[in-house]
Amino acid sequence: MAEDRQQTTDPRVGSPRRRVLAAAALVPVFAATPTPAPARPAAGPAESTAAHGRKLITPVHTTPDDWKAVAKVMGRGGDVKRNVMFHIGLPRRDLQVVSHRVRVRSALALGSHCSFVRYTDHSTLLMGDIVVTEHELQDFIDTLQEHRIRLTALHKHLLAQRPNVWWVHVHAHGHHPVAVARGLRAAFAGTGTPPPATSDPDEEVDLDTAGIARALGAKGSVDDGIYKCVFVRREKITDGHMVLPPGLGSTSALNFQPLGHGRAAISADCCMVADEVQHVLRALRRAGAKLVELHNHGLTDHPRLFFVHFWVVGDAVRLARALRPALDATNVVPAG
Image 1 (cartoon, one colour):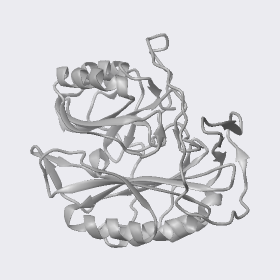
Image 2 (cartoon, rainbow, N blue to C red):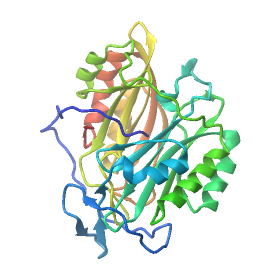
Image 3 (cartoon, rainbow, N blue to C red):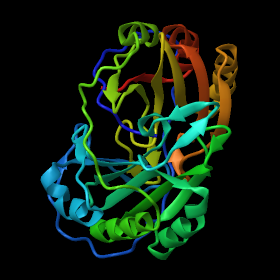
C-alpha cells in the first residue's frame, strides 16, 4: 500500500494502545563495498542496539537531488516523503479492471509504487508494492530474482476482479541503489505499466470529504480522483537491523472512489500486530466490509505486522463511521 501527504492531528490520544518492542536480524540482499553518500541523520538517535547485538541503523534525510541517478534509471521522477523516502508511483492506468460491477480507478487499488531509503551506513533499502496481471506475473517474478530483488508477499486487494491482477511486494537492501533500480526497471519492462502521467492534486471529488474526515478523525487528500486517508503505526518498526521510517511498509489506508449521490467504493487495508487482528476482523465485518486477504507484507519486520485488505460499497460518511472502530482497535495515528 502508498505513503501519502495527509496532515492532521491525532484525535484519539488517550485511547487504549498496545506497546511492542522491536528487534530482529536481516542478511542484506546485496553484499558490496560501501560508496560515499551524503548522510543527514533523521530526527532521533543515530543508532541503538538490537536484541542480537547488532546495531540498529536509522534512515537519513535526503532530497530529490540525492536520487537523480535512480530516477533516471527508472525513467520517471518521484518525491521525497517525510524527508527520507524517495517515492515513485507507477499506477496501472492501462488496466480496465472491474470488481463487483465497479470500474476500479488506478488510484483506488491499482497504484504500484516503490520507495528507496538511505541509511546511516550508506546502504539503501527498497520496498514496493507492484500491480501485475496474472499473465505478467511469472516473468515479473523471474526478472526480480535474476536481479536479486526479493519477493516478500504475493496477494490480492480485490475480490472477483476482471482481468485477474496480483500485488507483489518487493524488497532489496545493499549499497548499489542504481543497480537495484535497473533490476526493477527490467521487471517493469515485461509489464504494461504505462509511462508517467500528471494528475491534479487539487482535484475535487464528489464526496462529503469533511464528513469522512470527521468520522475517521483524519484529514485525507485527493489522488487522481480518489480520496485517501492514511494512518501510521505509533511504535518503532524494524526490518532486520533497519529502523523503518513511519509509513514505510506499515500503513493503514482507506481509499474512497466516488460513485455518485454520496456513495463510494472503498478499497482499504489495515496494518495490525497479532493481538489486534481478531478485533479488527470483527469490526470490519460488523461494518459490512468484505474481507479479501489477511497476510504479511514483509519477512523480517518486528513487531510482526499483519495486513487485512477489505472492500465495501455504500454511503461514504456512514461507512467511515462504521469503519472507525477497526482503526481504533490498532495502535495508529493519522499520517502527517
